[in-house]
Each structure stands twice: as structure tokens, then as C-alpha cells.
Amino acid sequence: MLYVKSNNGLNDGKLMLEGLIQKIVDQSTVIQFSYNDLNYLYQESTVLSKVYYSNFCPGTKRIESLYNEILKDVGFKLKQYNKVVMLFMHSPRYQLMMKEFGTVSDIVSCFPQNAVIKWGLGFDDSIGARIALYLICSK
Image 1 (tube, rainbow, N blue to C red):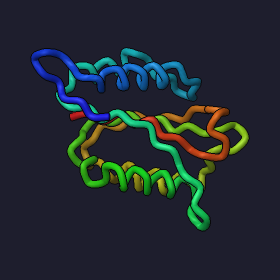
Image 2 (image 1 turned 60 degrees about the vertical axis):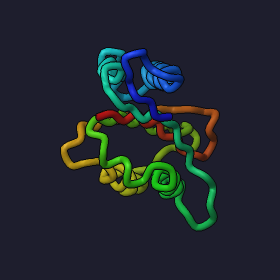
Image 3 (image 1 turned 30 degrees about the vertical axis):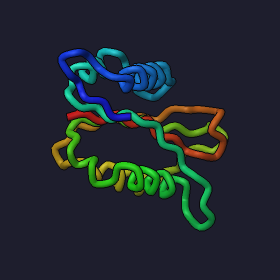
Image 4 (image 1 turned 120 degrees about the horizontal axis):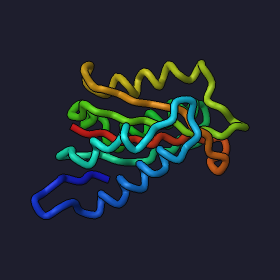
């Protein structure tokens, strides 16, 4: 969901942003996000807020599937954002493995080199073997 701030306030994208911020703050992570960490997003002129899920594709690793979903959806447009919040979600039963983090660096490389990126890991039992990415970008 993309929204642009105007003199009259924000369109419906603000509701998704608030919901996504709430989910990120409520997650149990190694380093907890707080509302203070994310308050700046309400002041930004343009914000992209989305949730991506890996899909099962034979022969494709789940993190690569997630990366492909992001590229298919927004791809090169990510270069315009210089502030990024990413929360990777996985099930305790199907944890994100260290060998999968190589592709995480591919996701990070979609943003400008000088981008400020805050990221974390959280658990979500409801997603099974999939991986989810809560992504909020601003400029």
C-alpha cells in the first residue's frame, strides 16, 4: 500500500501503516521495536507498507521465493526509499536458517547504499513453513 501525505491528511494507506506498525511493535523479537522507533513514519511524505509471503515453488528456496515476490511487486522502485523497516517472520517449527540469510542481503541491496535499515526477526505460528516480511519504506 502506498500513500502520499497531502494537506488534507492521508488516504486509506494510513490504516494499513498503523496496522503494520502495531504488528511490528507487538512482535516478540530479540531487539524489540517500539513506537518511538517508528513514529517518524507518520511524518514522511511517501511511505510503502506491505506484507510479503514466500510461496512454495518446487526447486526454489522459500527466502528466494520471498525475494522474487518483492521484485515482482515493486522491484527497482525500492531504490527511491532511504528509510526501511523490515521484520522477517517465521514459525518456530520452520525457523529461518542462517544459510537463508544470503538472500536477505539481496533484499537489502534493493535499497540505496545510504539507506537506514532497521530489521528484526519474529515468530508467527500461523504461517507454517512460509516466511513473511513486514516491509515499511519511506523517503
